[in-house]
Amino acid sequence: MIKISQIKVSLDKICQKAPAELVKKGIIGEEEKQLVRRAAAKQLHIREEEIKEFQILRRSMDARKKHQMQYIYQVAFQIPHEEKVLRRYGKNDAVIWKGFGNGAAKESEKEAVNAASVSDIGQRKRPVIVGMGPAGLFAALELAEHGVAPLVLERGCEVEKRRKKVSRFWDTGELDENCNVQFGEGGAGTFSDGKLNTLVKDPTGRGRRVMETFVRFGAPEEILYLQKPHIGTDLLGQVVRNIREHIRELGGEVLFETQFLRAVWQEDTLEEIVYLRNGREEHLECDALILATGHSARDTLKTLYNSGILMEAKPFAVGVRVEHPQEMIGRNQYGDLYEKLPTADYKLTYNTGEKRGVYSFCMCPGGYIVNASSEKGRLAVNGMSNHARDGRNANSAIVVTVDPSDFGGRDPLAGIAFQRKWEEAAYKAGQGKIPVQLFGDFCAGRKSTGLGQVIPSIKGQYALANVREVIPGFVGDAIEEGFGAFDRRIHGFAREDAVLAGIESRTSSPVRICRDESLQANIRGIYPCGEGAGYAGGITSAAMDGIRVAESLIK
Image 1 (cartoon, rainbow, N blue to C red):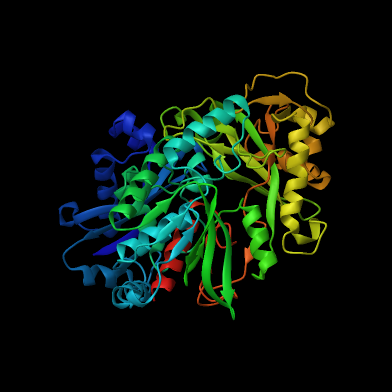
Image 2 (tube, rainbow, N blue to C red):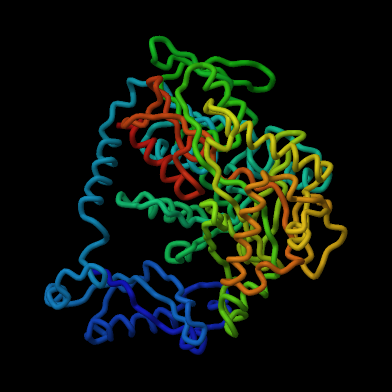
């Protein structure tokens, strides 16, 4: 089996040959697969019929030249005389190579699996996982599939009940502080676009395992080859539910509406945990605790810090959400083909004159801005899309990097205080509703009094306000400067009636819980994990970290 990259096929040719409904959905059908197969044979100077076991591993788009856009593929297949073809290309690894990835990486993955199969779990107490976001979910699945039945504690509700509570909050403003867009089965990712792209390198193949696991439990198969895969809010909940039920079938236990309170240790070694269930404190002996709390479990982080768990402040980003018509984004990105292709997205970065990074984050094509608050009297926003991404607007966070020097304090929790300060300002500006403002008014520093042609697509109540007042001054200045640069990339990005909403403050955790090479904290038996612990930034990387921590615990 060999792999080859940089196989190119023009989008015009694909649109001519492949069914329009598949092209629009981004699904590779037999017609497109045949075009790619033919291009691969031509590139290798072999006959097409020699190619066996043909697979498309990855597809990305090159839209730099609107008049000749193309898809670029990475494929794998078998052919006779493989060694002869390999010699022809020498050591040009950018073009062709044998096997699936780095051999050493595959061996390390095998070592992890073998270690799991021979580990003496019978001598240990049942491992406990706090949090059932991507990190906790995949840690629990990894443990359960290796014969280790974990106990998972989730302060929020199962996804079915959680959806009802979140919908009620968006309709009425009645917030459940334990079950909302941040807390509950699936974590914050359940109410997002379900984006699975990550910048984390994957030498061990854990990222691929995450994708294959999602497909195994109901996600669309195209996430295995898309450059920017996503599942969608409407589908992700069922996938998460299927994984949960499988964990239970394997002997794992999941307790919802159960809040972790504290850990108890002696001589720097974990002995028990305490949690709250049905209004009662319960104690459980424990020598392995995976902390996968998510980035919004502020009370838990405070308790851990006050009890002696080592942690440090870390940089993150804050800003606003912006909405534009999806048609405008599509025309800018794809030209005349925009109606035939999958819903267009974008990724934008810029460094200001003051050396602040400004960038788009969690871009949601055809999506919605959502009220993602988790604390009363404070307000934060996020973005989400359904699988079809068929909403009228595109939205994205436009955020500015902040670091501990901006927080106004030196202790590790100063970033949380920073977030809360500006979330309180957002709540006040909108009187409990999402504050929104036109970009032209944002630049002028005045409250908006009406909307333009861009009609907000927002889940939750919103009110016209001065969004500039709900973010730090230097963040507002950087965003305004960044919009000017982005408008040169996407014409109309800085249009005066673009809708801004604030505050986007939960881009990542402002805290990192320190861990050593064994992935344990300064207390033996405690394993900080995922985005809340400061070791991930999104669904895929959090799930990968969950698998990694589970492997370490098993060994």
